[in-house]
Image (cartoon, rainbow, N blue to C red):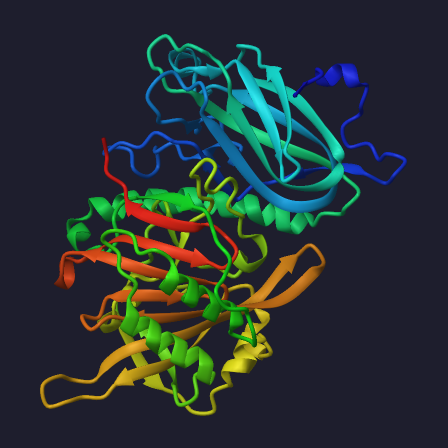
Length: 464
């Protein structure tokens, strides 16, 4: 364990180019994790003190830990664009809740902090001053990859009124010989700001009189368990999905959430056949309300396949990064079979062309959704029923190397009551559980398995 040297004693000029070509640049985080955060029944959304509020460049918001006690031992972790030649990280920190001087004094602040760089594991200690405004720290490591920065509070300055530990803002500057893409970094900050707006909209949605008809809960908790070796190797264009399904089937079933065998058998058959015989359709949501921004759950997005955060620590600290994915279409209708209208289309592209993003409609940054349906035929006792829907969202992203077309395939499989039971992406499979029936049913939990990674368990968050 090394101790941090005050930045001003290092004699370094921020932003200067070194002899080896390394240069300091600012990186933004659009995903963040924490050991805990404050969550109560009255502040689920715009004031729930999620760790992402520490990277929004706004002192009026903050990460606020939610554990019992004064906050010592709590941590926050920021996931950044991977840079392979990173040799130093400079952090600018607004310590405490700096929305106002009164709130800064009332809440706890970090005193001694351990900064950990991942994946190198470089760990250093420092003492922050008990002052408002910005203060800086610098951490060095042997030149190598950087994917995340974690701050752990070893001790705290006590608040005059509350025991909650707060950090208003953290800016991240990385010295590396690997070039970054400023457009990508700007887009990350824009996504955080859009997320803030979405949370305000979510608060309004759940307060609306129709809140009882929202099929998801106000928030979820994620926990991770150790991954394990996959029972089958990945082969072919759908190899990753088939491996994830096999892992989901053989992974020990947790109480209250069975592996949906019928739905998994249908999924395996679809992937193994390349979805031969499935009907190309235009899929339209009957319920067009957007999925509200709640903790632990979010629609998939085009950038996930490039910028999705890893799961750090998994079995070690029980933490899980990111969210559990929902359908990329982003509307509530796709959570139920009867919430989706499907209309057969002619001259549709092949599934392979859609997954390769080799289509003119994939040239825009907004995902274009293509779909193929499998429908159970009508019988004397029941009408035709949508059993499964393969969707491929394709579009063009600005990545470090320039513009690149990408696609996000997802297979949605519904149970016999029409609820989304299974969601399979390119490398993951998620089984969902529900509470209640009919129009009042609510997504209550999930188990997400990805080959080679931790298994994530999602459960409905209960306010204390």
